[in-house]
Length: 338
View 1 (cartoon, one colour):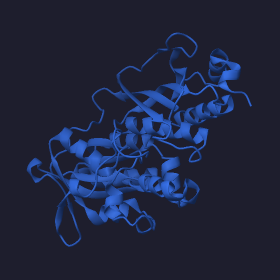
View 2 (cartoon, one colour):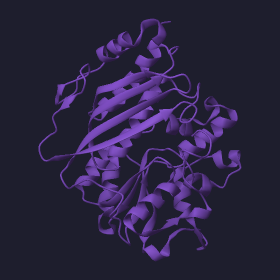
View 3 (tube, helix red, strand yellow):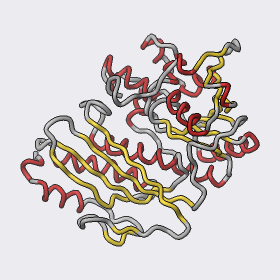
View 4 (spheres, helix red, strand yellow):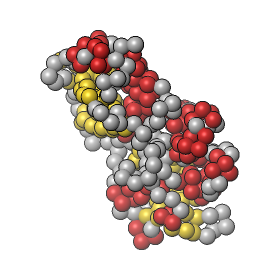
C-alpha cells in the first residue's frame, strides 16, 4: 500500500485537493497560497479550531480514519453551534509519520468533509507536515452568524433554566470502559456517543430564532468543568439537580461496571460535543418545542442562581454539595487520554 514516504508530499497534496468539493462563495480555493472567501452581507464571522493528538484524543483500534475525521469535524461544528453560527469553510491540517498510508489519509479527509458538508461547510485549504512521534490532525472552521445574534458564555441570568442536549457523560464513560476492555466491548450507545457525536448546528439555528437562549457553551471537557466556565463568564452561580443530571446521561450499567458514582460520571471529564444552555424561563416551552421538532433530547438539569450562591448540586433528599467536590472537567496537561 502507498505511504506518504512512497508518493511524497506534493503528490499527497494533489490527491487531497483533487478529492475536495469547492464549496459555496469561494473565490479562490485549495491549491493557492490562501483561500479567498466571500461572506454574506449582514453576517459576522465565527472562527474556531481544534486539534486531535494520537494517544491523547484517540488510540489505535478505537476508531477508523474516516470516523476520526468526522469526529474532528463534529468537535468544531459543536463550537459553532454554541455560538448559533452556521459553518461555511474549513482548513484541515495534518502532522503524520512518513509511514502513514495515503488511503487512510484520504479516508480521514472524506470523513471530515462529509460531516462538514452535511452542515453546509467545505474544506478550502490546510497543511501537511511530517512528524516523528505522535500524529495529529487539526481543523479550523469558519462560520457566519447574523450581526449581533451570536450566543456567548456570558449573558446567563439568575432564574434561567439550565438545559443540556443529548446525553452528557456518555463519551467519557466510553473512554473509561475502553481503557479497561477495549472499545469494541463498550456498550453500543456509549461507543456511538464517543465515536460519532452529533453536532447541534440545525437545532441551534432554530433555537436562535426563538430568542430563548441567554448563554451557551459547548460540552467538550465535561459538564462540571464547562458549567463552571459559563458561570465565570456570566458572573453567576448555579444549582444542578443531581437526579436530572444522571437521567440526562442515561449511562446504563457503566457506573456499576466502573464502580463509579453515576453522578460523578455524568458530571466528569467527557468530550460529548453537546450544548449547555441558559434559557429564559418564559421561553422554555418554546425551546422544548424546537427540540421536539428537531428530535434533539433536551433536559433541564438545574437553574442559574446569584453569584454568591456558588456552584452546587442538590441531591434528591435536598442536601446540597459543592460541584467542585463531585467532579472536574478534562485538563489537557493532566490525566490520561480521553
